Image 1 (cartoon, one colour):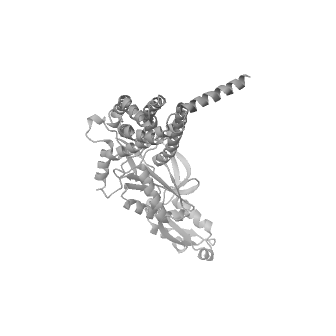
Image 2 (cartoon, rainbow, N blue to C red; image 1 turned 90 degrees about the horizontal axis):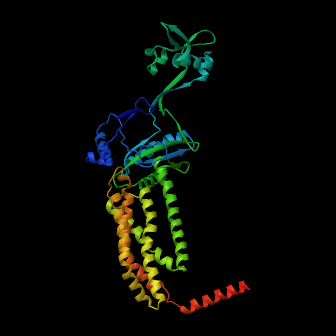
Image 3 (cartoon, helix red, strand yellow; image 1 turned 90 degrees about the vertical axis):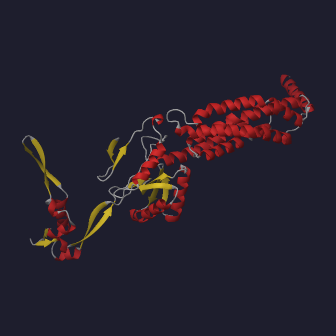
Length: 435
């Protein structure tokens, strides 16, 4: 293990490296869950167990949910953050939670009675200078002794500045030369404040980090945080994401755009290939079936919707449309030979069954090692293999029934006269251009 500081004297972290998966009986997540369960028994401190994210920008790690609360002033943030954390702790979506804005720095807030100080002839600057010289540990000079350099620091002895009551032993000189006891001029109030203030988008902010319960995805965690924010925070607050949560949100929006763009590209290419706008729609109907199979596979295997499963879903667009292409193209060829639509689609389905089975099984078997999490660091890519295998097999079964049914309903009989008219029109246009 490696040890490191976390920016505070009462905090630290331990980084642990695991042996190869084949040399241990538990997975990385199971070990993290076990450590979380064990450390919850200790009430002397708060222990948070997290795993390094598979994909992250930079060197950041931490818990998967990083939810930023932004406020216009510090007092409102100080009021709402404890309520927000209480709601997060009660939510079953999360196992552990933490916030970077901690009010654990003890302070003494001194309020000067200005009227009393003025009557006694004590200036505000004299009070400030006395406290500064006695408590701030100001460096005045250096001196050398035995070849070493030492600092000259002016402040009270430690025994005279370790308790708020020690302020009663501090005296301030008035403008008449009299010594006035400091506690006659000020009111002391013990408070706690954060050792550091954080800003995000120029707002005072606090970042809430949370670990997910088993079976929960990052998307579900973000939705749960949004619901808590809607119930606890008012309209003056705003929220943002960071870390792995922001990566997930950005990749999800980009993935849906890429998914739609891939569908459009496939449709345009098929329209040019079949010289029709209807046949590509019949073929693309295999995609929803594949996506349904992908989600069903993720649910059955207890896996989440993440960046890897999104990549696998985009891959399915190209992998499963070839089933529809094989059937529709061969049915069109038979239809052009004079065969009726029902007979043509039945013959095409039977004739293309073998190549459809061969290609689909080749794809599924090829992705099977990924789905079974074989190899180093394969657990993170397991969802991608599950999506490919499940979506391919699910669409394979439904394609053989759905595509023929839709084709029989939607396709039009072959019209040779239309082909002759088109040929005559093209020939006439070509002759006109030549003249």
